[in-house]
Image (cartoon, rainbow, N blue to C red; front, side, top):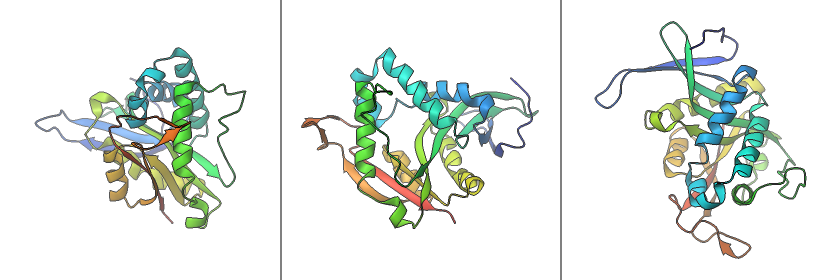
Length: 241
């Protein structure tokens, strides 16, 4: 474990008491700064593909090329310096590993991820996921709906497998208003691909702007997600101030 000064990037500390199912747990939520960049990138590559869209494309995602590309994309997003991480911590403030990460970026009006960019050389599995996200987001206009020219985009939220179902992702989401204040960006939006995350977002005040039924969704006239764990993904947003 390491002990360091996190006063500038730390948002809050959380302590969970022991229960019949789990031991006690302490962690802090902080901005992913440069010192956490590589660890956060590795964490997202390991855990984020284990989601509704990724699991449905498991055959296309078992690709070293994809893993390398994914790492590049996550590092690009995390380098913006506004993402959040939940990090294990002991009573003395010594830190352990990242157990949850929410990759966040700022989207400005007119921004678009170029699927056909030759510089990116996007692997097949990731290309399908990006196209899916672009398609559901294109169904709504965040800038018009909230009268803004930029917003915080929740690019990906993941929790380590052995720390799931302990409310950690919810605590990280609840820290998003602090990022909005820090950047002066009042709106936060994200595509939620799992039923649990959709319910969590609704609980915290997010409104559904658009939906996409994966069971009928096609790319090049082919059903991409034949057996999705959650049949409907939702593009949801909230204004904090």
